[in-house]
Length: 312
Image (cartoon, helix red, strand yellow):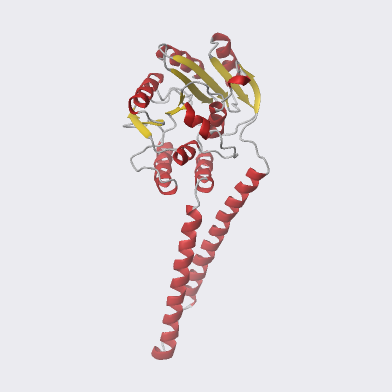
């Protein structure tokens, strides 16, 4: 019998999480299943509901974080406590039907993949969330050398041996897909259903999406720095060409040199690039500072049904 760990980060999911766990266990009753719930500082009564779930099902583990660390940090916490040969990650909002986990597992077994990502014909997210997903995939293709036909879905399945490599990353700003792409290209995909959100609204605000993208930009690639280096070289060459043109104009054509408007626009554009570049360097330095001063990836306040000897 195949064994699988289901990692579910929970944030304000009190209205869906109990039914989600019940459905997962029903749909996967032919497998050896454990579920790891991580309460990521929910503001509702998700913690109480997770306690009730653990009292009902002995194969459900619960990790209660001290505050909201973010989805990827919560998932990293859960991955540290996964013990079965495959690990599926699924959101708590029921937009991914638990029955689709079987598709991920069957694809992994058939192709002997390290990771299997889900993809959708149409995502039932808000316009802002879908736009953010498209932007994320475009940028990841450039920054992380992601295959162009690969959609980085949060609903995925990973082999345990790769999970053990992923959790070696101890920095405070994990990006799960970035870590996966660092470690393997043996990746499969499978088409799955995506449902409308039954209750509530997405917890991904503009600020949270921006924070996720900055983590990807800064923590997992130096290409932004290289990009601005190229801009600097091009700007320098452009300045030389303009200088030569003005010198030629003064010596041979006796025309009036470019006026203040052109000079002002040029100065503002170049200074704007300088400030943007300094801000980018500041982001790199700030992330390094937070990493080196021991900023925790997560902090566990309480754990239930967890045997420390089983920690990966």
